[in-house]
Structure formats: C-alpha cells, structure tokens
Image (tube, rainbow, N blue to C red; front, side, top):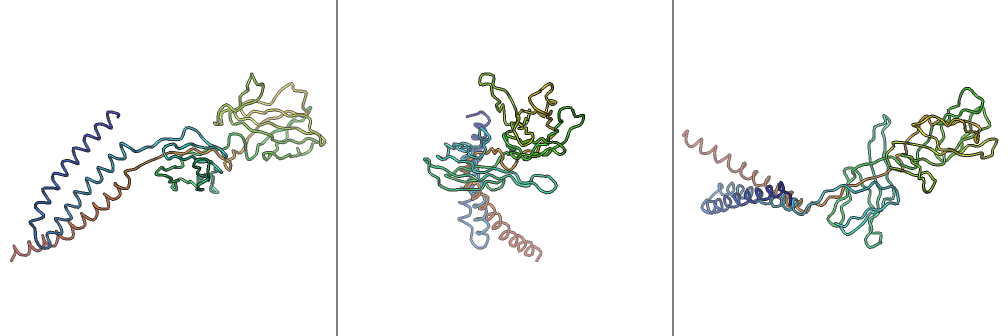
Length: 306
C-alpha cells in the first residue's frame, strides 16, 4: 500500500474511533433525556453514526476501489477485457456528434457485453451514462476520429503540361470526375500516421494520431484506371512521376468522426452505497437536531424573560 494511502487509512481509522467514542457517550446521555429534547439527541446520534458510515465507505473505496484508463483506443469490432468484472465488451459503433457551430455535443459508443463468449446485453455509453455491469463501471473517456477512413479529401489535380490545377472534393471510396479534363480520382485508403514497412514493402499505420496523414488515390483517364499513388498532407506532390497523367496534392481532408476510436475508463467503487447512505443519514440527523432544538432554545429564552 502506498505511504499516502496508508497514512490516510490510519488517520481515518483514528477519526472513526474518536467519533465512535463520542457517540457512545452521547448514547448514555440520550438515555437519560425525556420529552421533545430526546428527538434532538437522537438526531445528534444519527449524525455521529453517519460520519462513521461515511468514513467506512471511503476506506472501502480506498482499499478495494479501482479507477484506470483502458490501455487502447477501440474501433468498431474491437474488444476490451474487463477482468475485474468477469466480462468483456465489444464495440459495435463509436461516434462524435457536432452542433452546427462545429462544437462537439456528444461522444457515444454502442457496445455489447460478453460473458464466456455469450452476448449478454447491449448498452449505449455516453459521457454521463456509463455501463454498469457486475459491480464495475465503464465510462466514456476519450474519442478520436478514425485512423483509416476520412469523410472526404480535397485533392488538387494538375494535369501534365498544365500550369494550374483543379481542386476536387472526393468522398471516401467514391470516384469523382475532374472538371475540364478526362481524369477522375478516387480515395481508396487513408492512414492518419503513414509509415512504410520495409520488410513487407507495404504501407502501414504507425499510430492512430493524425501526425502524418496520407490518402491512397486511384487515378482514371477516359474511364480506365491508369494507376494509384499515396499523397501526403505534409509533403508536396510527387515530381518526375511519368506513370500518372497528372500531379496530385492533398490540400485538406475531413476527419471521420462517424466511425471513431473510443477509449473507456474502468471504475469500481464498492464503498459508494455506504457513502450515499451516510450522507443521507447525516442530512436526517441534522434535520432532527435543527428542528427540535431551535424551538426548545426559544422556549427557554421566553421563560427567562418572564
């Protein structure tokens, strides 16, 4: 146990012991009281006991509680093991919704709970709507746009021999004609952080962060596919390439938040019910002390004046 947690535990136990001793002495005094004042004494006892309950709940959460971030971001189809609860979750969908102003208004993940490979239930996790299962909570922690798809890409296509290019907005996976030419372009793939695997001699995704975005563009001419090329946002268009009838530049792209990457926080707080019960009891106890002691004090004041 860390030193700070150990010191907190010892201090909490000492406080609980002191409150318990005070409570016992109040129980002895309350047994001698008769009339309406006894209700106020009972309220005081309830308040003292509630403090012990709150301390017990806090200690339980400190010793047996859990709060950790999931180790990875998950796309649709990804699974997260939750050994603390004896289950796993499969992400079915993950998305971010935006207002007209462009500000995000909701992060949501639709998940399926699995136990021993069986689908148990489905749940939509939002920022203030966690999944609670087998005493463990799964909270929406973070959301990133897709690392392998985009909504669309803005390409600048410069036909060979031309001095100016034509800008084209190409939705992901759709062929788009380049105005004024016989050319067409189609975005086949996207990597948010492009790298090249030398051993396999193929493109690969280095990370899910958008640090070196690139799109694979297929070029067509007169209805025939003539080739394809990776185009990078961080670098200018390819020079000296004679395999394509044009030069390509990636001017911009729209991240795909409809097929996002979600990350959860795993939480287990076994002492929470005790904390809630303790605070409720404390409110009741204070109410009894207030409502039954104030009239008595007023009555004594009027009696002394008389």
